[in-house]
Image (tube, rainbow, N blue to C red; front, top):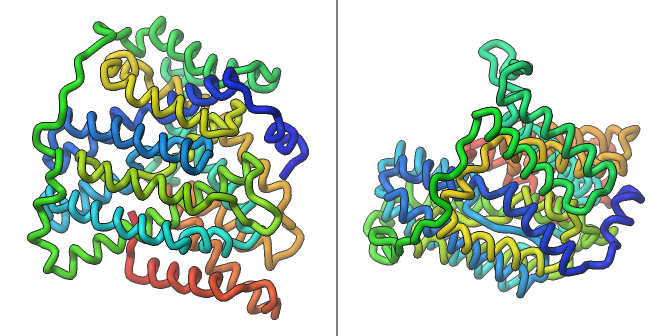
Length: 435
């Protein structure tokens, strides 16, 4: 870890810093309370029910993360997994959303058992140190890429896949202004600089007519009327092998998505040692497993740790108190939905870009002169944002790490778990279990 990052990680935790960090994390991941209901409603799920489930399940899982695992991370229904639920499980496969929630519940129970016996923690310990650094850098690049997209700085192109956006357009200009302000505040080490940047960019977007101030600040939340408990009564289709394949896909993707996220966040907070071990990792995994179970019972897809938690880490979040703030904000969102929904994507985009840049510092500790290390490390870093999938980057890194080490006859650097994980990813890619 770079010396500057170590120094930052060693700063004493205070309630003021943790509150600012929690607010920063929440506002960079608050989009999920709007986006998740929009995606799952495509499967026929009632929008307001999913909104309630998203907020409550996220708060529940995040409280467990803070109180039980004592880490400053926020959890919520994962992007990618919600798309798999809506468009593959309930779309292509024709499964009802009620049965889909049952599949999420089954996966969550299996997650919990694997976490309690410590198997998921052993998987984190199996990640070679160079890949730990590459995962952190890859997630940094991934976060930056997401921010660039939200800002309109990077857009899709039919021939080159990506291209430079129209920088003079009003949304992109506001995002660039926000990026300048946020970068300056962070560079000057202003406390809460990222959060101030989000607020300033939101105000600029409103002034420019790109966002509307909320008409109402409060809205009385309603309990779910259709999704609550639906997962308990919808196991009829579990006799089909396709549904069990879907459960396996949910297990596999979330397992490694969460592993990659926790490794990167643990690296950023300085909680992962030189051997790649993360204290209380099984407790952190238990938090997302419990969140997934609660989410399925309330009415949402798989809950997982969010890479946007890195924004709070950069803002100084070091303890579970940061997670408590995030959880409280999710609950406050229930009646404050109109206010939270008023924050446009162009306002959080600068924060994501800056956070991604800071997380990329992990690349400095990779031995880029050694091809045995450099090839799998680069694959990990590039494949994550290029395929918009954390698990794909992990898989590419693990497989190439084994190949390069075997070719160089460095057998002593590979534990048996590394072979197992690499083989599992090879099967994962071969049968197309991607989201």
